[in-house]
Image (cartoon, rainbow, N blue to C red; front, side, top):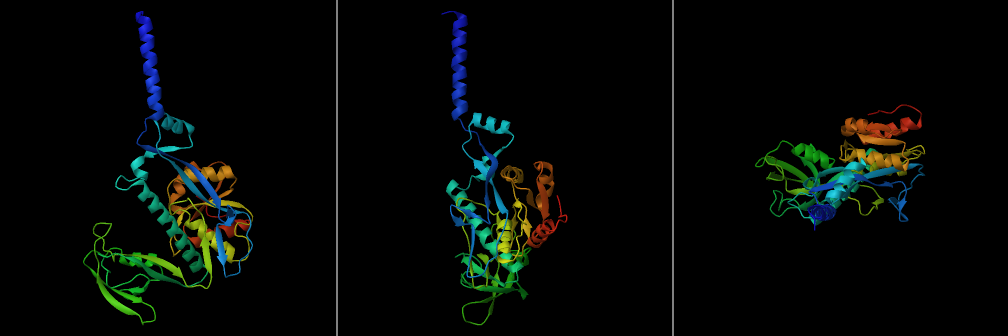
Length: 340
């Protein structure tokens, strides 16, 4: 065997080995990209995404789509190169999506809980916007939390230090700046008994230096009808704005979209405030590809969205549910809407 032949064989073997490794060796990154989009005014697998029972609803038109981001895990070296070259995806450190202290099952559970919370909060925000009363209800009470033995799951929380709390977010805002060891007066209502006030010493929690009651809270709407949101295999909190708009559209006369294909994203709290989200370039791209002409952008995402918007997609800036409704009404009337 000549030296030249040996060199060729070794080079071929190395190339084959590198090719094999590139195809199977994973990198510590995940790929983010455009995910599925769903029309919340329509149905998925024959089931309405939003169904109102026990209350008259009004016809809708057009589409009102929530948008998502896809996450690809187990990316190989060659796969990472392909995602990078595609221009449709971004590579981010895996620990940003899957924190090392949590298992994949725990991450999935957390995302599902965030999605379920977004459904509940969207319902509360929509009904509050429409004038229906809402209440703040105590959820799970930690056994070792500050409120253990003082409050129970299902208690209606009325006031903190004499200040009324009409939504869970208001309660959270009232407690901001309070430190562990501080005492607060909590007025609550339980069952048929008259309201009572208890003094609770705040304990430590997730954020150092911040005082916690040691319970979860949620918003409930005091209405005589049911709203069901059905959308499986979707996680995260960013569909809140679109869910709330769809509920408003179904419970009010006139088509909110005026027949347009509107898409968007954004978290929402029970007071109707819209929060920024991640992955907006991917969401806008998929919405544009599916035919959306208008995209509702949380105010906190406007700068990024304006830099990355696909051609022909009108960006509408929204900071609250009320602003979103008024912007869509303006578009339907042929008037300008706030832009990014």
